[in-house]
Image (cartoon, rainbow, N blue to C red; front, side, top):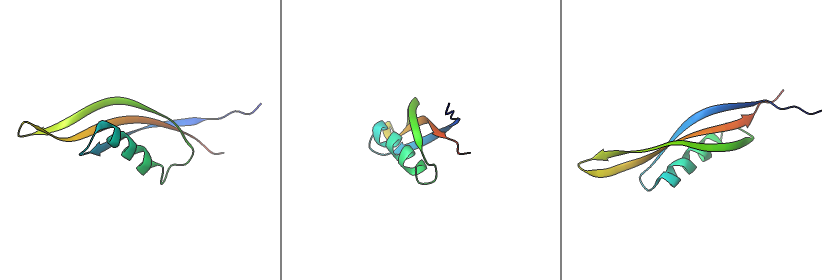
Length: 69
C-alpha cells in the first residue's frame, strides 16, 4: 500500500487589486521553491486601510505539499 505524508504551511499574499490576486500571488510565489503543492485553503482575508481607502488586500492561505522520502 502506498502511503504519503503532507506538510501544511501558512502563506500570506498581498495585492493592490483583489483578494483573489493576493491568494494567487502567494501560491504562485511559493510554487517556485515548494514542489507538488496539493491543496490551498484561504483561512483569512483582510486589508490595509490608509486615509479611509483600501491600500491593499491580504489573503492568508494554508497550502499542503507532499514530503519526499
